[in-house]
Image (cartoon, rainbow, N blue to C red):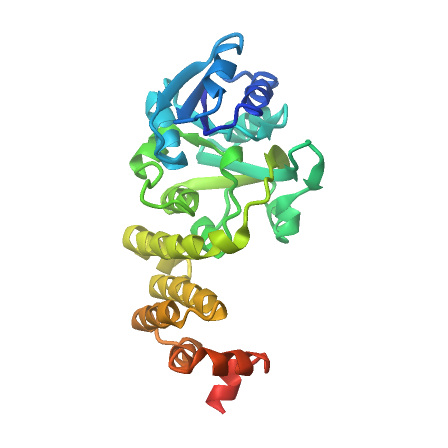
Length: 319
């Protein structure tokens, strides 16, 4: 079993050497490390050139992390691919634990794991992200075995951090690699496509340290929700049959994604964007709540602000 590690980077000169070092410290060696520089304007190239022994370095014009990961996948010489962002780190036994699990369950094509979160000074913020989202016990009970109805689990909550993934290159290629048209949720789309056709697992142990930089959530929420609509539309297109088998209505998935987008714009009093989002939700799968919010968008923003103080606008309007 030979593994290629792919590190996409953009202006992470301060952290990339530590990321590579965490791969080099693995108790089971990684055969190849590929750094894809996605148009960095800092001294990332100079930092990578000083790393010994040298890694494979590819520089390309800035196209986003999906394109950078895809470049690394296509350049990889081995059958298994692992990912690590340039500002994150693996725990020393990550690959060993994943390789042991794959040897135990050879049907697995993707193995992920838990992660902890650290700040820019390497101080621990979150001990276990799975525990934070109340998922740790669920995966502990599986003891590393294939996840039942993994596709349904993923569309409910994306439990797979990209930096913990070890996956067969063939499965990535068959699923179309990372979708460059989606900026937020492109990982969920790819993992779900793989889970629709293959066995996957999640090790309930921390395999990665993810660095938190404190991005502005308000600025990112609308684009994230817009991309979530695209993700659910893609999964409906590619995996409707599997979703239905696992008890998930594909149309409801898309309708809920549109509704979530509508709720966000409504909360920002951007009624011009909220109303078409609710209309799109109703077109996919009618719901009373989305319909009430769609009607509410006809009211002046001042009245909506007053009504929101009641904290139960749908119930008030439907009474």
